[in-house]
Image 1 (cartoon, rainbow, N blue to C red):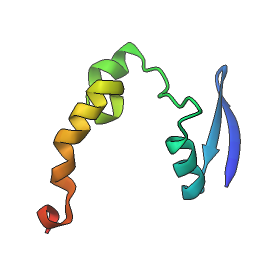
Image 2 (image 1 turned 135 degrees about the vertical axis):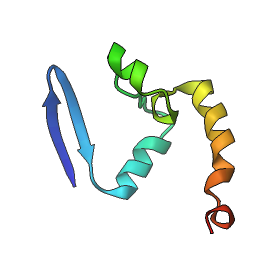
Image 3 (image 1 turned 180 degrees about the horizontal axis):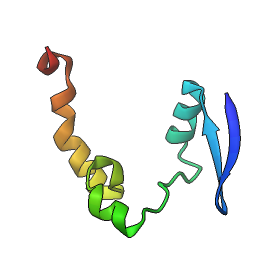
Image 4 (image 1 turned 135 degrees about the horizontal axis):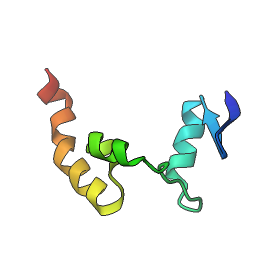
Length: 73
């Protein structure tokens, strides 16, 4: 359920338990940030997954109604 690996010089903790992932992402005391992207990655990936902070919140608010069950039917 938990594993640890190295990506170059960067350690990575991999969680496979949904409850643990929820705890890490909702914990306001810790600091969870996205890993830095390369210049090529920034050019290619300009979606919700690559945004941070206020930009992420604005885009998420815009996209949220699209995924309601009534709209998907």
